[in-house]
Length: 595
Image: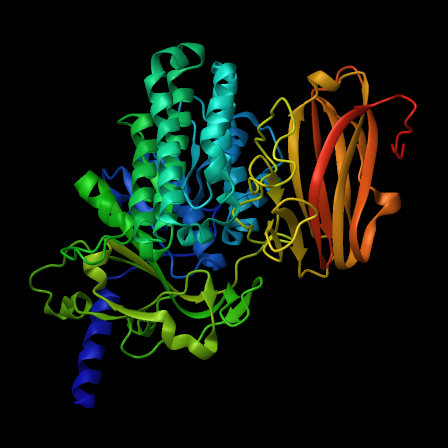
């Protein structure tokens, strides 16, 4: 029986040598002639959904860069869609069109650590350069299709309403308030009582309905495109609520397909999209109602205009979270594939880089029957453990899930940017909503109206076991010893009512084993930058202390437009915040301005 298997495998390998298409380097920048067969396979498709076996492989990044370049230049592709936040990706898209912003910082603002790499930065810079020198060709678009973080999407809605109908902002804020307290930790939302979920669902739907009802007025005040993005941003929030209400991750694939299609349809019939995702989302299983992925929904919608592409590898290393200690991504040497795997057979061809068209084989090619049968394939994603390698293999019928597959023989880890961390439901320091007055200063409404930036080694949340007063207080907590990595929570208000006044920020802070520093901070801003700032650098909080009142006093000069205030924490430890107050004071009260 073993001899028969070996003989069959040898025949398969010989067939693969004849049928597979070899290509050269995975690195972009050179000739794309070796990938022209890929363009032929894509044909008239409008969507190429390109997966990968791991999210931390350098060669997958660079090969996808090559594929994107050749699709743009040879097939007229216009959109690059990423498995990340809707509103977060739009900030990068703005950079592609205007050059505004630091592309590295914008990349760091994405939700997942997986994309915060030099390779992805190279793609963004290439897209920006293309847009600058595109002539009459369509500009490239950078799109997010995920809904797992939604508070920046809420800000997108509110920013739009602030622009077209300022009097309606308060109404929208109140409708978002209940759900907003869960936005920082959506994974916990499923544990809430049914009545809370029903309230949130109705309120979020009300925001969407109000926008839709006011479409004619709002489109006149802005544009149809701006309104459409705001409306779909409201839809993103609804998607997040529905998915996390039941903690049903199968909905994620359906919603990502919906959002990808939205971007494509908004752009018109000539638009074409390259989607960057995992193999488990890109796939479009044929005739299997039990396994419906993003590719399934897109294939049903676009039929022959959709192409599912998979990427596999035989040996090497990748970046991934350690399954046993998932604190931050580290390089992993991956265990070699078993014999009954697609990767093993592809490696046996001796081809370093290969692609296989799976859309149909000649009838006389009986040797191709092997590839139509189920075999193991590797599914690592963003987490891995070599000691538990068997968990990362799953049988599939490759030709019934993908139209095309790439296999690379040897791979290396992606090049992570310095201090790349996954954020807890996003780095929330951009596209901030400016309200007219401070809100929820006692945290009895959770984290509503507060933004925060917290890498994976930090946490921001609500404490209900104790508080300085009332039923709740907020906290920042860190297990990160590196003092250069910090977290902040903040609120932004318009400075209109405080201009040419002296103001005092005060709050009660409790500290536990703060090894570096923590403190209140306040910044008075103008359109050109900070006018005044105090971060308590000369009186920082450290060590352990009970509830203590701290304050910052600054002048708000003419020309200021907004005031940003909050709490920050650097290094290991935990701090709690409660009873925040912002008030005008007499000029006799001395300022704490360190300048």
